[in-house]
Image (cartoon, rainbow, N blue to C red):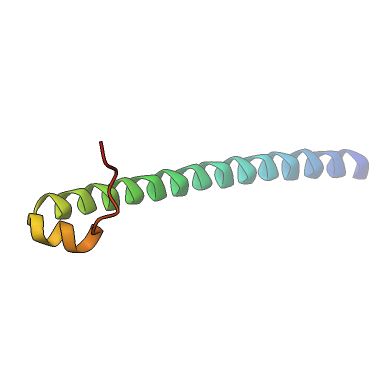
Amino acid sequence: MAKRKEESNSVLSEDILAKLKQTKKDLLKEEQKQEEEKEAQRLFERKEREKNLSFAELLERHGDKGNKF
């Protein structure tokens, strides 16, 4: 009877461990998705700010280091 109880506990703990690992994977995926969204938002905001800069401000920021055709 003690052996059956140990097997039951073992199966139960393995099941709990598997659920915890899956939850951890899900949380890591969600965190990565949020980081990617933050980065995309940051890049979008940067492009929007650059759109609003005047030619003089752009020239001052980037100078004469642009590619020439």
